[in-house]
Image (cartoon, rainbow, N blue to C red; front, side, top):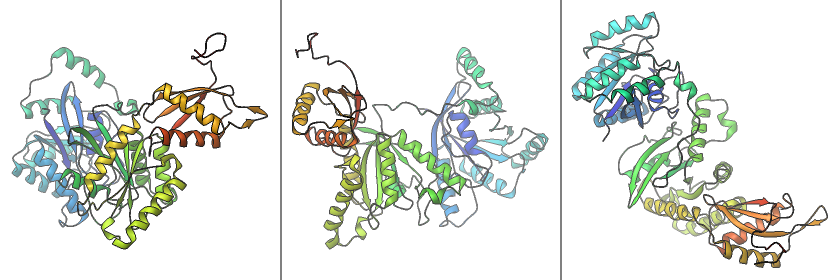
Amino acid sequence: MKPVVAIIGRPNVGKSTLFNRLTGKRHALVADVPGVTRDRREGDAEISGFEFTLTDTAGLEEADAQSLAGRMSAQTMAGLAQADVVMLMVDGKVGILPTDTHFAEQVRVSGKKVILLVNKSEGKRGGEAVLEAYSMGLGEPVAISAEHGEGMGALYDALIEALGAQEPEAEARGAKKKRAKRKNPLLELPEEVEAVRDDIIQIAIVGRPNVGKSTFINKILGEERVLTGPEAGITRDSIAIPFQYKEHTLKLVDTAGMRKKARVVSDKLEVMAVNDTRRSIQYAQVVVLMVDATQPLEKQDNQIASMIAEEGRACVLALNKWDLIAQGDRKALLEEVEYLINKVMPHFRGLPVVTLSAERGKDVDKVMEACLRIYDIWNRRVPTGALNRWLEDALQRHTPPLVSGRRLKVKYMTQAKTRPPTFALFVNLKDGLTDAYARYLIAGLRETFDLPGVPIRILTRAGKNPYEEEDGRKS
């Protein structure tokens, strides 16, 4: 098992920048304002061939325990408790503040092995801060620049010593050090996320602010893993959390709430958070669209659903806060929601709808069961023979329309891929399939082959029917 290393410190000292550098991904939001990170984020990290699990945490502040800052600090201390080594980071440009000394004492009391990092030490002032940091009584400070990648070798040596670990073999370490000599590896990081793994189902929880996404995740996990509270928009980063549900290995992704675009563009940090949520949708396999049952399916919910459909992801609609709906109104509300799905979300016709109360922990397991069912449908493959027998019948019942005076002739159909179900339709006119006829075929595919609630795509191809012999007869 990999050792766990936590980065802690005051807000805006560069913790997330170091996290991104050591994990090799831009997963943590970074901005030149304090308090960007609010939840604990974990990632696989390495430095010079030495691998470990890294935890990014919220900035430590002295605040009332019930306040947002107090709850953020509590999350940080939970991360500290789980760590093997703590990297306490201070700002080399600002120098050592009384709060740094206060939290250094808390780290010392925890009994954890500590590495004191003086970040932003690329200039003259950084050297002065290193000397000043000796007064904290945490041993020899390590001067680094997380943004520019300076001091990584010294950090590596400090980690090896703190963990009592053996260095990687010289050959492997040398190869990794060569790669580490780039001036700024963050500038060369690929935008792509690792390919989806079949043995892990990634489930993103999305929706408008304050609909209960984080509360739902905490109830499923059985612990206060992500920050919650009455304030809207608490979550900023998308936080991925491994989770074992029955025999399935999952990764739950908590995301920032998505407001209407017009309300977001003026806030740079919120724009970053929304883009992070979009990225989570793009690389999830199943997306739970969580909706407030007291305000079901508003325009913003429809826009989020369209985004999920464009990415071709499987989807589950979760009506949260169901306990606030009167018993006598529930049946009518469900009927209205199902009607709206079929009317304004035709790409998700038959979408599974689950009612729950995340705050009370009622029916949260039903959401997970619905996710697993829709995941299986999303991966479903239809036999080519059955597909073409259905197609022949569909063509007889409803003949394709004329396009620019020419009749669209459909030759055959095959399923090109799954995830989402995508079908190749071979025709005489590649651009001759009208939207109306495509909707007719998709509705028939969905009903005949039991494909409810997942996007279905039809691609047209102009080509020869492989089921015909050279003289044009069917084999």
